Amino acid sequence: MPFVPKKTKKKVEARYKTIYLRQTLIDALENIAKENDTSFNNVVVSMIERCLEVEETDEND
Image (cartoon, rainbow, N blue to C red; front, side, top):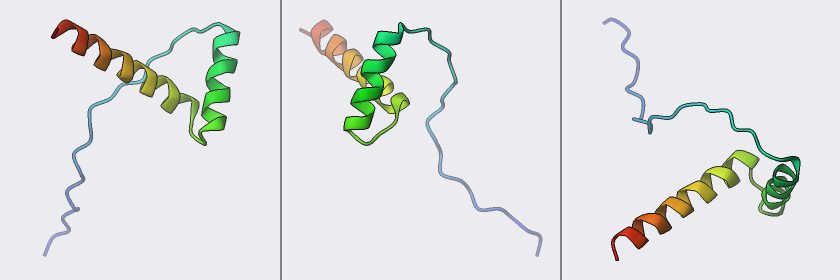
């Protein structure tokens, strides 16, 4: 029998982007990440996703 790799779980499509932020904002985000035992990236993504949820909710009113 030939080798057949397992099918991987389908992941959400993602891309890498660079963003320029003021140092004071970076410091604040790093503090939030440290307080919540998570990554800088997770904090930023969570904030963006939350803001988009609010906008979508407001548009449906």
